[in-house]
Length: 494
Image (tube, rainbow, N blue to C red; front, side, top):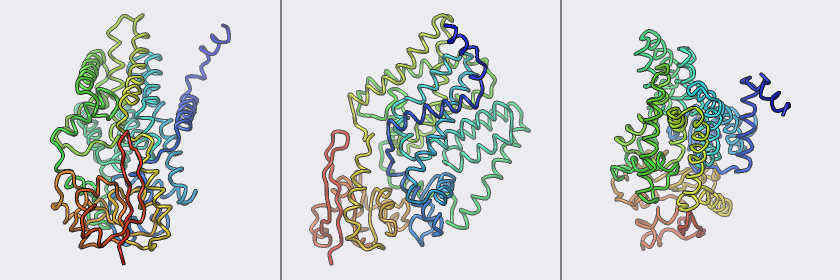
């Protein structure tokens, strides 16, 4: 007992350095147990970084200056690291970098929760929920820029609360260069700062703009536009989406902690209502806090409203993780309405529900490929057919990540124009549920085609002209979330 008391009284536990080391150890343990599970989209950034580090330019296809990545800062960071560790190690390097950044995020979520809620129990449990939430664990293993983006936002909030305009401007600029949707979080900070101190707000806005300006000028000169081409392509390719699809994914995330929109609608609505009510209750208990707090607490709501109106494709899980800190702080504010003796059990029950319910939902209704079976199949296909293709072959691939990474010298043609501007002219050919224009294949005549059945079925598979021009090179059936799919590789006939 005396040892426990001595540990509790030891001031060393309060040191940020030691806390960050413990947070890093916890994240490392979780991620090592879970394993590296790289997203297909992450390989797009890796290919840009590899080409950049090898002196081939900031390009996806050599010779084509197209900005097809929305995360230039992360690309530059990985390109720099690849000079040290080697380009072939980029997937592992990105995963390790993500672990370090998530260790910082774990600590920041808990530290800010301590400042907001004034109770170490709530702070520890909120941080643990962020660490152990199943969707977050899966995204953290995927090699995307999510950890860097979240770290920039959390450091922006922390600098804003300390009224340090220079530091806040730096983190705002880095957040914007990591992901363009950072403008929502930055805009909130600016508006709240404008309300509190318009001079400081202007200093913040001018400094952040000047930090971003060099990249905007470079992108305009080098690429012809600072707007990533992938944003233009997605807005055109996904124009046929149902008008409420983004709202459905957002409600599913906030209501169940998953992206499984095939869960019963009643479950999603009940969970969403409970999350909303607890958030409102938490907001009422936190209303007397410093106004700087509300820039972070209002971010999930602003994101929900904005994306529901814009209606982008929101089935990509990495978009949701940066919403978690603000949502967690609001939810953990709700038990403050209880008597002090009941708050500890309430926080514990809330933490168990926020981790346990999504985990149970994923087990009951596994409609999301959390094991990256698709990416593993693409890797296998590339390894088995690359010797049968010319190194400079022109390859059409709806999923350009793994294919572009494995076929390093190939010219990748993506059918919706993420990195291939010439494909945009063919998008009007596509109807609902169609992903590859038959006219594009006829006119562009790619040397090879990599694609899943649902990409190729409506317009290519079974068509006489296609069978006359392309021969099967490789195919394999596999199961993704209880659905049987087939990956095809075709080569152009002599």
